[in-house]
Length: 449
Ligand code: UDX
Image (tube, helix red, strand yellow):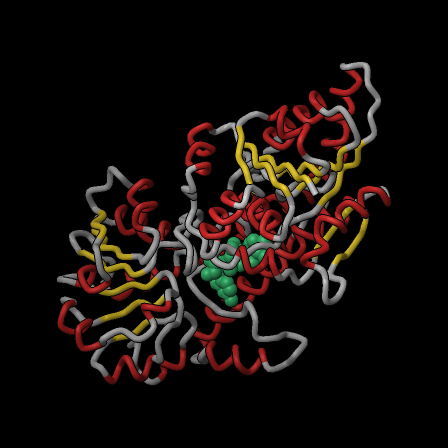
């Protein structure tokens, strides 16, 4: 099949590379000339495990190519994926200008039937807007060509996007015609062999499915963070509670890890956008608004603990920070908890010595003018002479550190663990004071006192 993909960001590139990898002819188009030039030379703009090799392999095999020429892309693909960004507006709603620009471009250049697929996360009703934009362009050209608009949301986790694409739990297709469904089936057939994972529905339901999935996951996290905060006050240990409730299959073990808040490009943006969409139809989404506000305050929990520990005297202190990315296996800093923490520390007059296995360059790019931030080459360097160690991201390499080294390198042996990586008692036996999230049990045993 011949497939065109608009947008070579995270979603577009993964989609393009994976579709090419199973044998389709894929042409990716982007307005960013430099990015396209780099991609032609095999340079990937993001860090995503497994992506670079399949981009290279498929470029070499002639199945994957890149262009800035939109007209060429429209002529090329029977299916046109729209995978451009939908950044949040000031009011939290998704900004559709890029999606609609692509829609108009398709309408301006198409010569025959096309399936136009919304892959970007777009608010319910966008399919109709894309349809209207294409129709208007066609009308302007005096044409009435047939086309279909399909919603096919992505469910890719950063750090595991290639795996998620290659082995999907489900392929949601919202379409209004059999013709479109059958072309989508053909495109996804290689991922759908053993049993049918395609869930076909109407366009609006497909659009809402994406938001509902992310909002449900965000709700699980905020729920656990709330119970964690309660655990602390009640002298219970959230890690025990987590195991206790996860064993109920109706609840499950996944996505119930408490921490210093969720970040990333999806959860914060999508929850906000869904609250906003609800407002547009005069519905007060109370639960979703709370999910968001619980998360906003959870991002301040570590700072509050630090402040209490040091009796509000943070000015002039230096803190070691392990983990900057919003989660492990990515260099993505969007909405990362580490940023809220660092910015609070700087505002309080403290300095930060930080280490992250992948997100150093990205951090440097964002905070290039911050003298109060020192980026360190190793996690050990970050510790040297610091007043405390803070952990914001659960990278594997932070899981079993040399605690004796931590004791020797820090001014005062104390750890603020935003991801509950350690057993409080074990850490305390090493002579280190320990603050986790929701580990009230340690308070009652005097560990945090
Ligand atoms: C998410 C969804 O998982 C994916 O299906 C969707 O398409 C895009 O959004 P992603 O943003 O890559 O993917 O990250 P994810 O692995 O879901 O983690 C999101 C955040 O939640 C991270 O900050 C993580 O640390 C936090 N988290 C996750 C928790 O705090 N506790 C948990 O139990 C799980």
